[in-house]
Image (cartoon, rainbow, N blue to C red):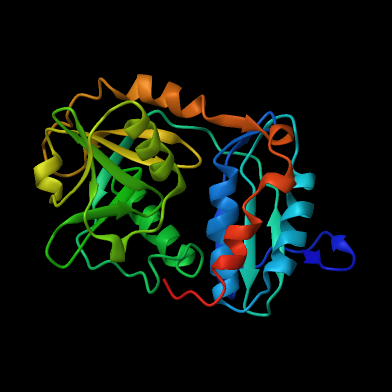
Length: 269
């Protein structure tokens, strides 16, 4: 738990009243896109009434607390009582592929564009998918269009073009997705928004991407009897993504996007 006067102190884990959260992978002090995680979490907190100055102090302390050796998966949290916390957690085992179950019900998230409020129900759905032999569950819109999973953004390839869902109102602003889109554009790859059902994706190279695992190609569409498309591009792009990691010491807090945090104040988007 964090206090603006005393800084960080140990506190019991809490499962109630989570308003916003963010998490990222730290490997031997190296992180991909930490500035994006700072902006996403802080933007949500400002919309919920915290001051940019408070968040700047919190983040300076939080980044100083992160271990510089080992593999970690820390999480920042904002609770209903306006308390801020940093949980320094060991990273779970990283997976190189993912078996997907298309969730047969409506997307239950109340706030899909903010990470935090729906983490409880997402964990329940993921557990049900795992009980069915999958690793994660893929959501769809009312029209049957694929959006994202309980834990990751969706990307796929159509020929030489990298595609992402054309359904922003249903999508969390994924940091890893943004990093891969930037990498694609820098590499001269065409990136476009597309509308696709899960059935449209069965023979494609499909990725679920997030801050923990990076790129996980879909290896099985559970319960369909269909084989997943070959994932020939994934190894190279995973290497490119890993190369975007930077040592925390290489990105002093004075260079983090505090200005961007301040400009989000009062924003509703």
